Image (cartoon, rainbow, N blue to C red; front, side):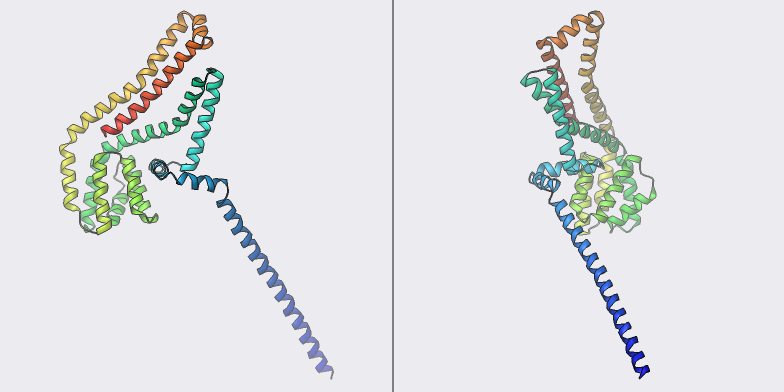
Length: 315
């Protein structure tokens, strides 16, 4: 009888231990599921927060959002379109406040705000233009190397030829980063058209557009493009002298962009040197003088925009 009772006690203890373990595991699993559910809800709220709403509203402007996205990605910028737009608005607000304090007129308030709003975009476009000029110089040797790798890899797989070109590490520095970005986007992004569009924006010239069209055909249809690449190289070698002349024209445009700034600083500097009191009174205290300075700044900024536009047309 004592043995039976002993077994019953052991059974009860085992059942109690099993029940305790079951309750403990159930509590742990329930707690983990609750935390997982709360984390998912938090992420959902974050996506539905102010940033998500603003980004969705910005995406409604398809051309603007796509242009900013391609521009920033081609520059490998840490900004996304929403943060870049927010930063531009912040600079524009600073421009409005500075214009209101300095010029104290509707025109003097509005124009610095507009300049501040467009200033980040102008800087990015100028930096991209500088990069495009460098890549244009190095584009021919880069395509020659890609053509060699394309022939070596069997004229079938563009991605394999791109990988071989990058692994050779013989591309010029600017072209190396551009080709790295293209291969990375083609491998991970899953949208070949968007990857090629960013690549074309980073190059920014006619030869780059032609090369992108060849890549687009090869990726979509799988047809060999060795003959087209050979024709592209031949045309680029023939146009090398013309490219030198175009680069000289672009250099003239860039020099002309900075000329108004130098003349303005020289003019005001000479006046300040010979008549500091009159310069202070006329350019800072007199409303007409402040308006003259404002007009000069607006015209200088417009000349920068015109220089960017002309350089883009020349390329």
